[in-house]
Structure formats: structure tokens, C-alpha cells
Amino acid sequence: MEAKHLQIISKFKSNLREGLAILYDFYSKSLYQYSVRNWNLDEDEAYDILYKTLETVGKVIGRYEFSTEKHFSNWLFKIHKNNNLMFVRSKLAKEEVEFKTVDWQQEYQEADEDNDPIDFNENPIAGQSEELYGSTSSTNPLFNALEKALLMINETDRDIVLLRMNNYSYEDIANMLGIENNQLKVRFLRAKAKIEKKTMHIINGKLQ
Image 1 (cartoon, rainbow, N blue to C red):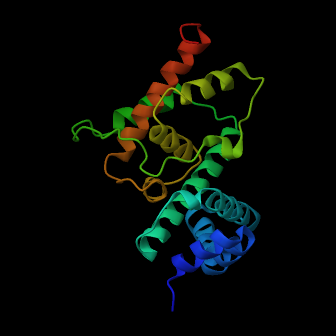
Image 2 (image 1 turned 60 degrees about the vertical axis):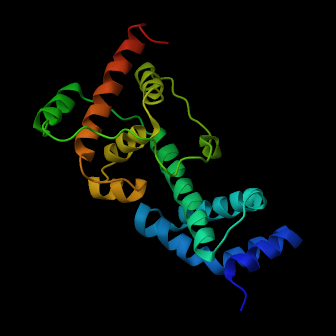
Image 3 (image 1 turned 180 degrees about the horizontal axis):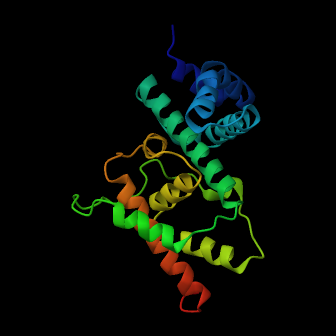
């Protein structure tokens, strides 16, 4: 029997709708369950992201060649994983989060400073545009300054902060972003400290 990825590619080449249909048949259940179990999304949210992934694949699949079924499924999973991440980030960006300086400093003092240097490499699954889910705006000057400050740190650190402030555990965050849990707390605290400093500078007119 012809491998799944070859069947899917063949269908997409002949008819977009048929390609989407067979992709849905083969992978929709596992992709849907991943969103529900790993990202704690409800049914409607999980299906929205599933359809976004199918739409994305339909637009870009013709640009790539896949040597094996595993190669294809890994590529599909990365697209879906990133769509989940973009959705959660967009959802959290709509919530005005109050950052308390005293709490940050207390947490930072409790962190172990004797660990190895932190790796600030960018998120390996990044690549899909943040424009997939649009942007939000607020009339609150502090929140607007915070949004700007968030964009001034690297993408992975920004994701860590947003997910942690939404009460995800460090283990959950490590699994979601595909990074090591080791040193994650220290990285989170340092990122928050950077955001706080940049937010205050923006409010005081020192940064634009």
C-alpha cells in the first residue's frame, strides 16, 4: 500500500479539496487530541487550530519534498504545534496582566544563581507568521507599554513569560515549546526582569 504522505501529496497535486480531505482523514484525530491534551484547549478552539493547520499545509505543501512518511508527519506536527503556540499567545495577549515588581524580585532572589549559563537560542519550531491570529490593542498605557516591551525580548523568552503568567507549570512549558526544563525558572525570571525594566523605560519616554 502506498505510504500516507505519498497519497496526500498526490491528492494535493490533483485537487486541493481532495488533498485536504485525505489529510483530515489520516491526521485530524491525533492533531485534535494533541491540542486538547497538551494545550488544555476546548473543543471549538482545538478544531479552529486543526483547520488552521490544514489551511497552512494546503498553501505550502507544494514547496517541499518529503523523503519518508516520518519526515512528512514531523513537518506537519511542527506546523500544528506552532499554530497552537500562536493561538495561546494571541489569547493571552488579550488579557491585561499585572506585573508586580516586588513579586518578581522575590522570585528572582529565590532562584539558583550558580547554574550553568542559559542558552538563549530561538524557538526551533518558529517560522509561521504571528499574523495568523492578528493583534490586539488597549487604551491602557501600562498595557500598551508592556506589549511593546514583550516584543523587545526574543521570541522563546516571550512565550515562556506569557505561558508562565497563565499558570502553566515549567514542565508544561518545556513540553509545549520543545525545550529543556533545566534552568527554565531562571530564564523565566530574567526575562520578566527585562520586560519590567523595558516597560518602565517606555512609560518614562526612554524607549519608543
